Amino acid sequence: MTLIFLVQHAEAEPGPGDPGLTLAGRQQAGRTAQWLYGCGLNAVYSSPLRRSVETAGHIAGAAGLSIRRDVRLRERMNWDGGQTLEEFRTEWDRSTLDRDFVPGHGDSSRQAGQRLRSFLLDLAAEPGPVAATSHGGVTTDLLRTLLGEAELPPWLLDKGVPSCAITTFRNLDVVEIASVAHLA
Figure 1 (cartoon, one colour):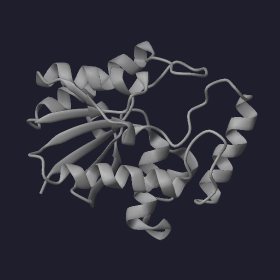
Figure 2 (spheres, helix red, strand yellow):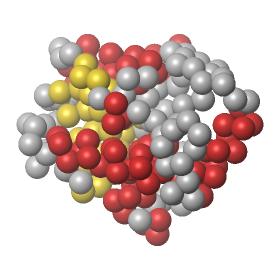
Figure 3 (spheres, rainbow, N blue to C red):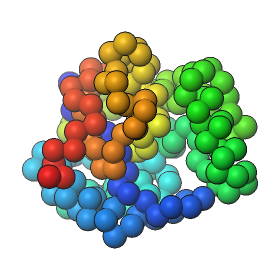
């Protein structure tokens, strides 16, 4: 069984498009990389978005590995500035409440959860442990898909996944949700 550490990207600069990490985010990514180094990683994957790639860069650098980009790790929606932030948040909220709603630019919550589930299934044949940097919305979508609404921690839908939190899986079995113990 493959142990998979799904890492929420570190704190990113505010703004639309594809922002990089803040100074605090780079520090979070460094602490996360140190913790994961002790796990003996065999591979590091990343969403193609910059904030995720930069987070993965810290992890891969510490482990002496290269980053493998996979589009299935991307966020459900990404604010590109083509709409106001309020319009983006309205679509985001609607797609969170109605898992089958497909926003104008992105995937439905259900599609995103299934996309990330297929990524985890493909890793089942790979020797672990593996780290994969992704995004909070799609991680929540995956957990909703695997566990159902009733099994989610009550804070997850309201507050989201914290920066650099690690959700751990053994194949498709959820071991731990959004741990930030390594950042203390």
